[in-house]
Image (tube, rainbow, N blue to C red):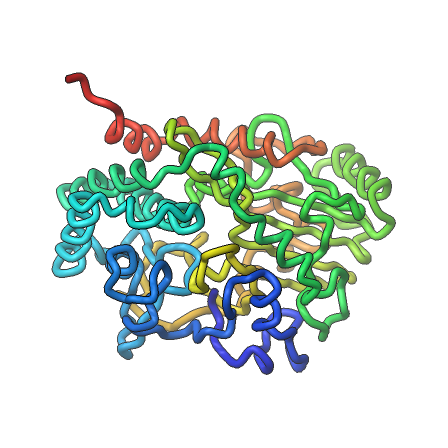
Length: 424
């Protein structure tokens, strides 16, 4: 989870000049250890995601694929929600990084490393990370074609071997519900200088929140199809008007009746929008399954100014039970970056979450409700053009839309081809 620092004094969106809740108390409540681990620079001895021994095969595999070295010698990636890999990255494709990755993948496959743990949390997390690296390796074919192929072949088989039965995926811990139930985070907006809040309505309780969808595909289409996501996550867009559920549904109808893009006049006082990212995993039948595992939650409150909050899965905590959701205040730009790897050119470290969010969701041409880009489509046109007609949906319906999109992508077809049974 990006953004290092003492949990009692960290600042960030909604956290400035205000003590954050005790993250160790949250961790205790959800049974996962502590979110207070340093998240800006980690060493080899800290890379103990799967086992206390940093030299355990699973730790070494994760380290070989995810650990990035900054010019100042600091190490990153343990805390990152997504692998720190960009379209222009040469890491894992040349030199010792490629040789090391191939070697440990070969060791994992030869030793049937997937049998080291039956714990579904561990298997789910490792499969998730390997799938992300696989998709990155297949995103281009014009550079390092042989090296990409060698990674793809090994990663595909490791992903397949780590697969859980569908029912085990569906039974993974609901870390968002655990975070809400802990009571550590306020349930409602606490003011511009207050702590990050986590609405209970995002866990399935009503509380005025409405999950939005559209005909023709996922509502959050730009997130679905863009790197680093590539359809491995379902992005759920929730909306809540100040008056609760009926007012929210009325607002949805007003959005559907809008004249062109004349949205600025709609009242946004106390409006809230949330983007909940849930992990998709691959089951033992080779099918995509929406898991209960929440990777991140972004909440925006309009009053009318926008206030941004973000929680991310703390993947560096011990994972015997659940995976914690913790507030974060910064991250490396992967989504809608220019594709240049900062570890290989012009390293500047993490950027603040408000700065990253405001790059797309604010500006002279995007204000108020127009900044809900899934609805207004400002800056990000749908491939079929026009504006979406919004309707209430369910997580399963959105997941089916994402899976249908993913199944048409070369990365998924390549993965299935590499793991398809062979005759004889």
